[in-house]
Image (cartoon, rainbow, N blue to C red; front, side, top):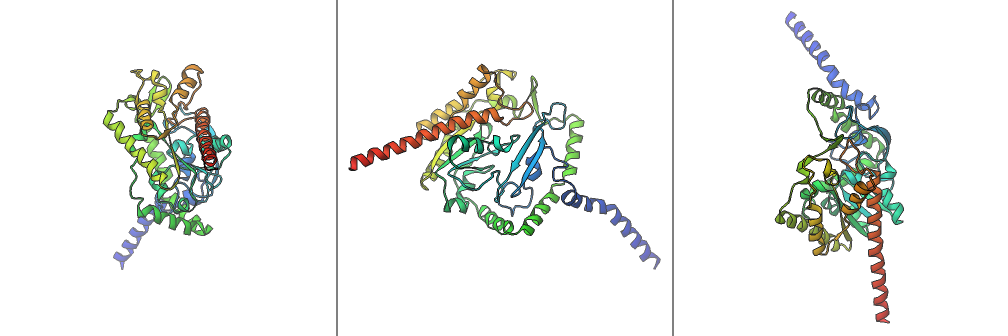
Length: 371
C-alpha cells in the first residue's frame, strides 16, 4: 500500500510539473489576444500546421496591428508601422473573392508591412477599374489546381516575384492531390463557424508563440543576427543578391515562365510577368561592392524574345530612388513599400489597358474586313 501511495504522489508531482506546459498553449490560443506574442500580422494569422485550411491565412479576418519589419524586429533598428489586414473566405488577403485580374506571387503581392489599401491588388483595382484578386503567397500550379478558378477563370493572370525568388519558380507540373484535398477540406471547415473556430484554435496552439518569441530573443541577445546591415539599411541577402547568372540559368528561368504563358493560354487566359527588383538591386550603391546587377534586364530581354509579356520595374524604380530620392523599401525590411507599389500598379495598369485597347482595335478591324 505504501508503495502504491508513493507512486501516486510521484505521478501527481509529475502532472503538476507538466501541467503548465499543457495549459499554456491553450491559454495562448483561447485567452490571450491573437497578436500578444507576434510582431506582424503575417505570423499572427498565417496557417502553421493545420493544412486542412485551403488558404495561407485564417479566413474572414480583420486585424489592425503595429508592425515591425522582418529583418530586425524588437531591436533598436525596428521601424514601427500601423497596418490593417482583411482576409477573405478562402484565407487570402482580399476584401472580396472576385477576379477579373488575378495576381499570383510572394509576400510582396500579399503586402507584408503594408496596410490593406496599400497592397498591389487594391491600388491596381482603383487604377484599372477592374476587380483584382490577390492569390498570394501561391504558385501557378496552385492556381491551376484550384477548382473555383476553373469554374470562373480571370481574364488576366499576373505572376509577380521578387528578384531573388525567380530562380525558385516551379515549372508547370502536377498540381498535386494535396492542393485539391485542401480545397475540399477547407470548404467543409469554412461552411461551419464552429469547425472554423476549432481549426484556427488548433493551429494557434501548434504555433507555441511564447516559446518561439523567447527563443528569438535569446538568439538575438547572444549575437545572432537575422539581418545584413549596410549604412542603416537592412537586406535579405546582401552581396549574394547581386550575383551574376549564366546564360544557361537565364534560359532555364525563361523556359519556366514561357511554360506559364502556354498553360494559361490553353485556358484562354492572358499571362503577364512582373519581376520586382531586390532592395539590393536598387540600393546597390550602399553595398560594399557597389556593383549594379544585370539579371533582370537580361531575363526581360530573353522573355520578350519569346513573346512573353513583361512589365519591367527596373528603370522606374531607379528613377524614383536615384533621381527623385524616394525610398522604395522600409529600412528594416526587404519588401517594397507603398511608393514602390503605387509605381508598379501604374505601370501594370498602363500595360493591361494598352493590351486591352489593342485587342479591341484588332477585333474592330476584323469585323470591318468581314463586312
